[in-house]
Length: 117
Length: 109
Image (cartoon, rainbow over all chains, first blue to last red; front, side, top):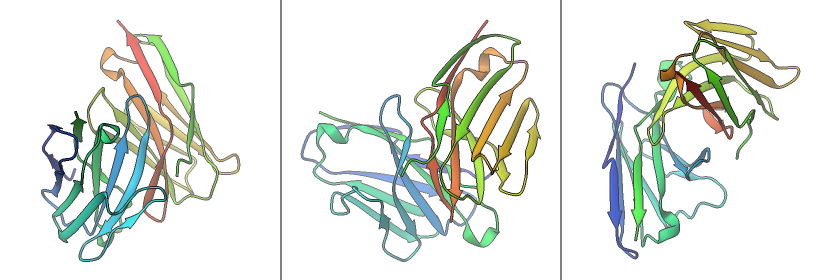
Protein backbone atom coordinates (compact mmCIF):
# COMPACT_ATOMS: atom_id res chain seq x y z
CA UNK A 1 0.00 0.00 0.00
CA UNK A 2 0.89 3.65 -0.22
CA UNK A 3 3.24 5.06 2.40
CA UNK A 4 2.79 8.29 4.30
CA UNK A 5 5.45 9.59 6.64
CA UNK A 6 5.34 12.23 9.34
CA UNK A 7 8.15 14.20 10.84
CA UNK A 8 8.93 14.55 13.63
CA UNK A 9 7.45 11.49 15.32
CA UNK A 10 7.48 13.33 18.62
CA UNK A 11 8.30 16.84 19.77
CA UNK A 12 8.48 18.63 23.09
CA UNK A 13 8.34 22.40 23.09
CA UNK A 14 7.93 25.32 25.45
CA UNK A 15 4.67 27.17 25.74
CA UNK A 16 4.48 30.05 23.27
CA UNK A 17 6.68 28.53 20.62
CA UNK A 18 5.58 27.29 17.21
CA UNK A 19 5.95 23.75 15.98
CA UNK A 20 5.87 22.52 12.39
CA UNK A 21 4.82 18.98 11.52
CA UNK A 22 5.42 17.55 8.06
CA UNK A 23 3.34 14.96 6.27
CA UNK A 24 4.72 13.35 3.13
CA UNK A 25 3.28 10.87 0.69
CA UNK A 26 6.25 8.81 -0.40
CA UNK A 27 5.06 6.88 -3.42
CA UNK A 28 1.92 8.56 -4.69
CA UNK A 29 0.56 12.01 -5.35
CA UNK A 30 -1.69 13.25 -2.60
CA UNK A 31 -4.21 15.64 -4.07
CA UNK A 32 -5.81 15.90 -0.66
CA UNK A 33 -4.36 15.67 2.81
CA UNK A 34 -6.25 15.57 6.07
CA UNK A 35 -5.07 16.53 9.54
CA UNK A 36 -6.50 14.88 12.62
CA UNK A 37 -5.96 15.34 16.33
CA UNK A 38 -6.32 12.59 18.88
CA UNK A 39 -6.37 13.14 22.63
CA UNK A 40 -5.46 10.23 24.94
CA UNK A 41 -7.95 7.38 24.85
CA UNK A 42 -10.16 9.29 22.44
CA UNK A 43 -10.99 9.06 18.79
CA UNK A 44 -9.55 11.01 15.88
CA UNK A 45 -11.05 14.41 15.26
CA UNK A 46 -10.71 15.89 11.80
CA UNK A 47 -9.12 19.31 12.02
CA UNK A 48 -8.82 20.36 8.40
CA UNK A 49 -8.76 19.24 4.80
CA UNK A 50 -6.17 20.59 2.41
CA UNK A 51 -6.16 20.30 -1.33
CA UNK A 52 -2.90 20.85 -3.15
CA UNK A 53 -2.46 24.42 -4.20
CA UNK A 54 -5.47 25.82 -2.36
CA UNK A 55 -6.35 26.99 1.11
CA UNK A 56 -7.24 24.45 3.75
CA UNK A 57 -10.82 23.96 4.88
CA UNK A 58 -11.07 23.89 8.65
CA UNK A 59 -13.64 22.01 10.70
CA UNK A 60 -15.88 23.93 13.04
CA UNK A 61 -14.10 24.97 16.22
CA UNK A 62 -10.58 24.69 14.77
CA UNK A 63 -8.74 28.01 14.69
CA UNK A 64 -7.16 28.52 11.30
CA UNK A 65 -4.77 31.16 12.62
CA UNK A 66 -3.50 28.78 15.27
CA UNK A 67 -3.18 25.71 13.10
CA UNK A 68 -1.57 26.83 9.85
CA UNK A 69 -1.74 24.32 7.05
CA UNK A 70 0.25 24.46 3.86
CA UNK A 71 -0.08 22.00 0.98
CA UNK A 72 2.23 23.43 -1.62
CA UNK A 73 3.06 20.21 -3.44
CA UNK A 74 1.45 16.88 -4.23
CA UNK A 75 3.67 15.09 -1.75
CA UNK A 76 3.97 17.45 1.19
CA UNK A 77 1.64 19.14 3.63
CA UNK A 78 2.68 20.91 6.80
CA UNK A 79 0.79 21.75 9.96
CA UNK A 80 2.21 24.54 12.10
CA UNK A 81 0.91 24.89 15.63
CA UNK A 82 1.50 28.54 16.43
CA UNK A 83 2.04 29.84 19.95
CA UNK A 84 1.53 26.38 21.36
CA UNK A 85 0.04 25.92 24.80
CA UNK A 86 -0.20 22.84 27.03
CA UNK A 87 -3.78 22.22 25.89
CA UNK A 88 -2.42 21.74 22.36
CA UNK A 89 -0.54 18.66 23.54
CA UNK A 90 -1.96 15.83 21.51
CA UNK A 91 -1.27 13.20 18.88
CA UNK A 92 -1.49 14.73 15.41
CA UNK A 93 -2.09 12.38 12.49
CA UNK A 94 -2.21 13.16 8.82
CA UNK A 95 -3.68 11.15 6.01
CA UNK A 96 -3.30 11.44 2.27
CA UNK A 97 -5.65 10.72 -0.57
CA UNK A 98 -5.40 10.79 -4.34
CA UNK A 99 -8.75 11.91 -5.75
CA UNK A 100 -7.69 10.97 -9.27
CA UNK A 101 -7.24 7.32 -8.30
CA UNK A 102 -10.94 6.61 -8.02
CA UNK A 103 -10.09 4.89 -4.75
CA UNK A 104 -11.71 6.11 -1.54
CA UNK A 105 -8.90 4.98 0.72
CA UNK A 106 -6.94 7.43 2.82
CA UNK A 107 -3.42 6.46 3.84
CA UNK A 108 -2.41 7.48 7.33
CA UNK A 109 0.90 8.67 8.65
CA UNK A 110 2.33 7.24 11.88
CA UNK A 111 1.44 10.35 13.87
CA UNK A 112 3.34 13.04 15.73
CA UNK A 113 3.10 13.33 19.48
CA UNK A 114 3.29 16.95 20.59
CA UNK A 115 3.95 17.81 24.21
CA UNK A 116 3.84 21.47 25.18
CA UNK A 117 5.42 22.29 28.52
CA UNK B 1 -17.96 15.84 13.41
CA UNK B 2 -18.04 12.45 15.02
CA UNK B 3 -20.64 10.28 13.43
CA UNK B 4 -19.85 6.72 14.31
CA UNK B 5 -20.53 5.30 17.72
CA UNK B 6 -19.07 2.00 18.72
CA UNK B 7 -19.84 -0.61 21.25
CA UNK B 8 -18.57 -2.05 23.35
CA UNK B 9 -16.03 0.55 24.47
CA UNK B 10 -13.78 -2.23 25.69
CA UNK B 11 -13.57 -5.95 25.17
CA UNK B 12 -11.37 -8.53 26.85
CA UNK B 13 -11.22 -12.03 25.41
CA UNK B 14 -9.12 -15.15 25.56
CA UNK B 15 -6.79 -16.01 22.71
CA UNK B 16 -8.62 -18.12 20.17
CA UNK B 17 -12.01 -16.60 20.90
CA UNK B 18 -13.88 -14.36 18.49
CA UNK B 19 -14.29 -10.63 19.03
CA UNK B 20 -17.25 -8.68 17.73
CA UNK B 21 -17.69 -4.95 17.82
CA UNK B 22 -20.42 -2.76 16.41
CA UNK B 23 -20.60 0.67 14.90
CA UNK B 24 -23.65 2.87 14.35
CA UNK B 25 -23.81 6.05 12.33
CA UNK B 26 -26.31 8.75 11.58
CA UNK B 27 -26.16 10.01 7.99
CA UNK B 28 -25.79 8.60 4.48
CA UNK B 29 -22.39 7.24 3.60
CA UNK B 30 -20.35 6.28 0.54
CA UNK B 31 -18.53 3.58 2.43
CA UNK B 32 -17.52 2.52 5.91
CA UNK B 33 -14.00 1.64 6.91
CA UNK B 34 -12.44 -0.13 9.85
CA UNK B 35 -9.03 0.74 11.24
CA UNK B 36 -6.77 -0.67 13.93
CA UNK B 37 -4.53 1.42 16.13
CA UNK B 38 -1.91 0.01 18.42
CA UNK B 39 -1.20 2.09 21.49
CA UNK B 40 0.43 5.39 20.58
CA UNK B 41 0.81 4.47 16.93
CA UNK B 42 -0.77 5.41 13.62
CA UNK B 43 -3.78 3.81 12.03
CA UNK B 44 -3.76 0.64 9.98
CA UNK B 45 -6.50 0.29 7.41
CA UNK B 46 -8.27 -3.03 7.79
CA UNK B 47 -11.19 -3.14 5.43
CA UNK B 48 -13.51 -0.92 3.42
CA UNK B 49 -17.11 -1.85 2.71
CA UNK B 50 -19.11 0.14 0.20
CA UNK B 51 -22.65 1.28 0.82
CA UNK B 52 -24.00 -1.25 -1.71
CA UNK B 53 -22.20 -4.17 -0.07
CA UNK B 54 -23.54 -6.18 2.84
CA UNK B 55 -20.63 -8.32 3.87
CA UNK B 56 -16.91 -8.46 3.26
CA UNK B 57 -14.13 -10.76 4.38
CA UNK B 58 -10.40 -10.28 4.69
CA UNK B 59 -8.45 -13.07 6.33
CA UNK B 60 -9.79 -13.45 9.87
CA UNK B 61 -11.89 -10.31 9.56
CA UNK B 62 -15.54 -10.21 8.63
CA UNK B 63 -17.41 -6.94 8.24
CA UNK B 64 -21.11 -6.49 7.75
CA UNK B 65 -23.01 -3.38 6.81
CA UNK B 66 -26.70 -2.73 7.24
CA UNK B 67 -27.53 0.63 5.70
CA UNK B 68 -31.19 0.38 6.74
CA UNK B 69 -30.11 0.26 10.37
CA UNK B 70 -27.07 2.46 9.77
CA UNK B 71 -24.84 -0.03 11.48
CA UNK B 72 -21.79 -2.17 10.84
CA UNK B 73 -20.03 -4.92 12.70
CA UNK B 74 -16.46 -6.17 12.72
CA UNK B 75 -15.76 -9.75 13.67
CA UNK B 76 -12.25 -10.98 14.36
CA UNK B 77 -12.13 -14.75 14.43
CA UNK B 78 -9.61 -16.90 16.29
CA UNK B 79 -8.10 -13.89 18.01
CA UNK B 80 -4.41 -13.64 18.78
CA UNK B 81 -2.47 -11.62 21.33
CA UNK B 82 -1.26 -9.45 18.43
CA UNK B 83 -4.87 -8.37 17.80
CA UNK B 84 -4.75 -6.36 21.03
CA UNK B 85 -5.43 -2.81 19.84
CA UNK B 86 -8.10 -0.16 19.48
CA UNK B 87 -10.46 -0.58 16.56
CA UNK B 88 -12.24 2.35 14.94
CA UNK B 89 -14.97 2.53 12.38
CA UNK B 90 -14.99 5.53 10.08
CA UNK B 91 -17.75 6.64 7.78
CA UNK B 92 -16.86 8.22 4.47
CA UNK B 93 -19.04 10.95 3.05
CA UNK B 94 -17.44 12.94 0.25
CA UNK B 95 -13.95 11.69 1.14
CA UNK B 96 -14.07 13.05 4.69
CA UNK B 97 -13.83 10.42 7.40
CA UNK B 98 -15.74 10.61 10.65
CA UNK B 99 -14.39 8.26 13.27
CA UNK B 100 -16.23 6.44 15.99
CA UNK B 101 -15.06 6.44 19.59
CA UNK B 102 -13.38 3.08 19.15
CA UNK B 103 -13.37 -0.28 20.85
CA UNK B 104 -10.34 -1.30 22.85
CA UNK B 105 -9.73 -5.02 22.46
CA UNK B 106 -7.47 -6.94 24.81
CA UNK B 107 -6.62 -10.51 23.89
CA UNK B 108 -5.33 -12.52 26.83
CA UNK B 109 -2.80 -15.23 26.14
